[in-house]
Image 1 (cartoon, rainbow, N blue to C red):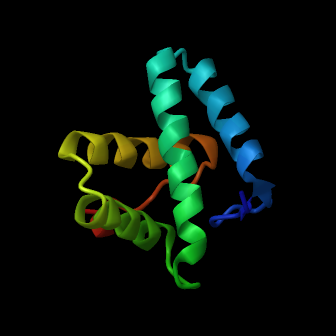
Image 2 (image 1 turned 90 degrees about the vertical axis):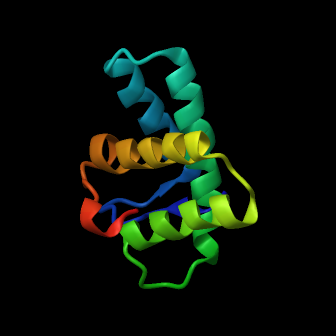
Image 3 (image 1 turned 60 degrees about the vertical axis):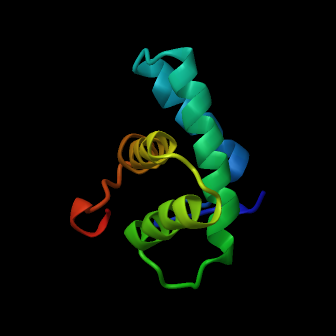
Length: 105
């Protein structure tokens, strides 16, 4: 997987990002199933975003990813909600960069 920077101050590769996610999930005593689901969706998100145009905000990347899941992959509403929460958690709790909800569906 490629390097992950998002709007992060430090560059980290995908495995470092996932490791940080795992650490925060465990520190917050979330369920193992939550950890597994968040890691699954974060991996898929990180694989998708390098193909997006440069200059998109984090909110725009997330919106595009969720739209592609629904339109192109037939992902259920429940799974889209899990994806949204996983990525929101990553930005807010792992990176310390809450996303603006006004632009996210």
